[in-house]
Length: 73
Length: 339
Image (cartoon, rainbow over all chains, first blue to last red; front, side, top):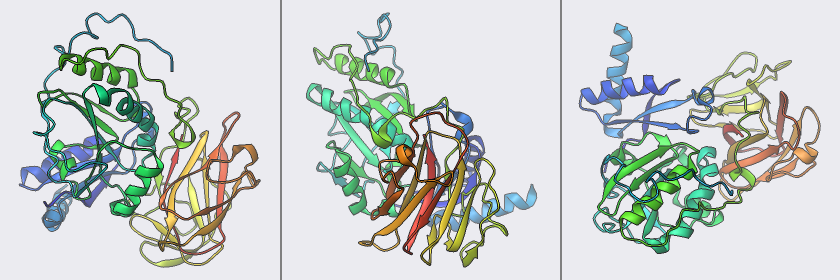
């Protein structure tokens, strides 16, 4: 199985990561969020290093899509 | 832990109020299993299932582990199956030998699915370390919890699902845990330092003059001083995407932090080697503030790729400067975490 284990983006909030995952999935790519979680006990301490992961076979497409999105932002 | 839950208002006697969140996803993407032959969602029908996503260097999971271990011990004979899904954060956590060693040293005897390809993570659409999903005996997810905490609520869910499955005598008393070392609860009231990484992909607040030089060997100078939650290298290091590697003996990391505990995920660059180090806090040996992986003089050695507890302060917590000097080369540092 081709799991999601290549990091294509690191952002500082889960919401931003979710938006990126939504974008990638809307283009047919498999993507997930991966981050540590302290259970909301100290949310201000959990803002760093939220990663968006994709399957290796989707990495190139994901990077092209994210680069194109940045160019139009 | 002796707390009792409030009057049940029906919560202890029925799981009917728990929503159905979907079916128990497949474990079919696991690349291996520890402590068990491969398990399947269909094969677990009739059992209450607790699925715990973890990665062995995650401090948030380490502090949750005493509860999961205790629940497995108390309720396995009453119809609960705990399944740990090890999904790696760092590349070295894909090494099954490392996971096996962690399972052994952390006294984990429940089944572990090795999820090095993130296939089970993806099947659950999970996002977090740690995460717990609770499935009823009919194979339906009825509750989940992300991160640390809410242990009594989670145990109440286990009791409800076991009762609904026909298990008698689960009782209402929560387990008692005696968490030590890195497994002990954080001092949340004193904690002012977030997790930080040393690899260039995710690091924050890197303060060595001239900044990071990604992917290349570089002689880093030490800054004159550090602000809170800033860190710096000095010596001959290579900052890579996920980790920073020391090339020549005598390299040094400094971190200004505010927390009771300081941990560093690190390991030798080559398996089977050991790297000696010396720790100082505010320029002095840690004494009583030493963590479990260093002595009072600040001396220790890193021989395994894992989280090392280097500081646990017994008294008041204030801004302090942590320093670690490696007496041998070829060590890789990954992440600082605090508690």
